[in-house]
Structure formats: C-alpha cells, structure tokens
Image (tube, rainbow, N blue to C red; front, side, top):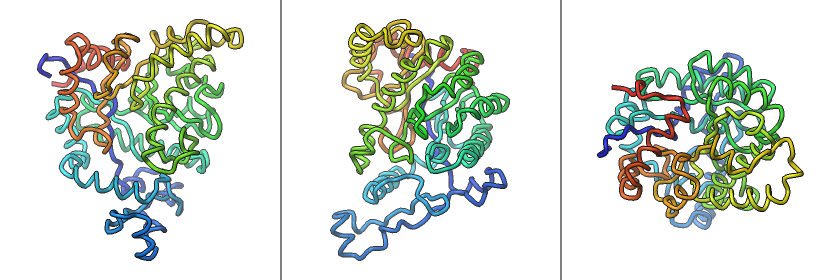
Length: 392
C-alpha cells in the first residue's frame, strides 16, 4: 500500500481440486468422494439446446460436481456455462490456486500481507440438508486437513479458517476442539438454517461458548445454489436472482438470529463477522431493529436482547464490504469505521481478478485513517493478530 499500511484480506478462497477428496476423506467415506459428472440436460437435442441456451448453445456444458450421483450445487445449466467462461477468461489469475506456494506468491505480488483462507466447494459439501451427519462431518474434516497442508508453506501469510459442520449441533463443540488442536484460529459457518435450525438454535450454545472463551472468531459466509434453505431460492432459479438475494439477506437474518435468540447477549466475548454480503444494508437494518423492533417490542425478548441491537454490533460484530459499494463512505460514517473489513473474495468470478484493483479503488474513496482501520486494525482485532505476526 502506498501509505505503508499492512493489509489483511479476510475473504480469500481456494478452489478445492476434486481429486483431493479421495486422499483426505476418512476411509469409510471415500466411496462418497465428489465426482465430476456430465449434466443430464446437456445431452438433449441440438434444437432444444438452441432454444434453451440461445447464444450460449455452442458452448460446452461443464460437468456437475456430484456425490453419489446427485448434484451438490443446484445451478442452472446456462449459469454454469457462463461461470465456466468467466473463469476461463481469468485463466492466468486462477493459476496461483494450484499450489499453496503459488497462492502465497500471488498474495505477496498483490500486496496482501495476511489472508484468511476460506473454502469454495466445501461450503456445499459440509452443508447439505440431504447428507447425513457422519458424511457432512467427514467432508468438513477432510477439507480442514487438506487446507492445513495447502497453507503450511507460508502459515503466517495464509490463515485458514476451519469449516465446522452444523448437521448435528451436539457434535460442533467436539469438532471445534479438534480444529483448535490442529492450530486453527478462526472458523467459518454458513449463515443459513441447516435442517431447519438457525444459528441461534440452543444446540449451538456449547460451540459458541468455546469460541467466546478461546477467542475464536466465527466467520459467516453464504454461497448461493446450495442444498440448504436460502433466501431467494424459492422464488428464483437464475444465479442472477439467487446470488443477489442469498448473500445479504442470509447475513441480515443470521445477525438478527444471533440477537433475537440471545447468542450475543449470552456470550458477550463472542466475535462474529459477516463476509461477502456487502455492508450498505446495515444502517437501515440497525435502525429497524433499534426502533421498530427493540423500542416497541423488547418485552417479548426480555432475557435475550437486553440492549439496543446496534450496541451488540458496536461491541461484537464486523462486516466485510464490497470495494465499489456506492454508500460505503456513508455506511462507515453511520455505523463507525471500526466495524468494517476488506475482503477480496479472490478468485471468484463476481469480484476483481486481482486484489490490487480493489485496493486502488479503496485508496481513492477512503481517508488514510479509514484505510488503516479497515485494512489492518479492524481485522487484526477480530482475528487476534498482532503486528509481530506479519510475515517478512
């Protein structure tokens, strides 16, 4: 950075290679390893394909990731083709994902000092309402072991978050303790209801208690077209519609659940962050919760919501923004610049190819003090990182 500010990227992804799952899944579950399978709708007649896909009929349909023959991501064929073509146009930018060494090198080149490394496909495999508890946990365990190996080449720079299955809340504390023994310092969860249970289900309380006492931040990250309940999925089939709804709306409702269900009040040391959901919705949401909910209806939640919702945010919550949000400056001014974080979402196709582009955009819109907060001080406080941990 031109102002010599260290940079923490709180939302940086890997693309898990499909051939890693047989190597890392526990032996009883290797028969359920994901496979790439030709899509059934790709084999229809040319005339039907042309009618269905229009200008994209000549493009090859990518195979679907399946487990036991069933698709893991419920994405329409046209959206899958477009996403594949977008990824192909980014070919050079995707190459660093092949190995941890290359990924670390790309971070150095982009000016990223520390990155929180998050999954892509594992969010769909560990969170799937059609999988039983044992298989869901097996996918989470396999990913966690693989990502530690991937990041081991530069562990100061690449900080993986452990994914924890929510299929059985009673197992989450044990899975978290295993992750802590392995050296993880943050965890990632989906914000969605899983098997009908929201993030405020009392079964999750032992898990949240350990996170609070061990100072482990909980990172919430959505992904559209999963096999879980998701905002917008009941109304829209397109990626255009589902992606627009799922990320911000699931974050808004998860934040509400943590408040309304008493999680933030019960565990005041718990730190949570909401990633890839934008942040411009937050001032309105807090106004609505403070005034229309708490001011007039607080008697209904006595013992669970003991102060204005905005105060829980001021003390326990962080939010990753989109660098080109038109109301970013107003949102920081309204809520406070110390609540916000930079996340590149590298290398997903709905964001900039290189974090340098996003950082350049930020430098043109935020003050020097705001930049230092969102790029270093805020994420360092959330993640418990000190200046002495910066890689050389």
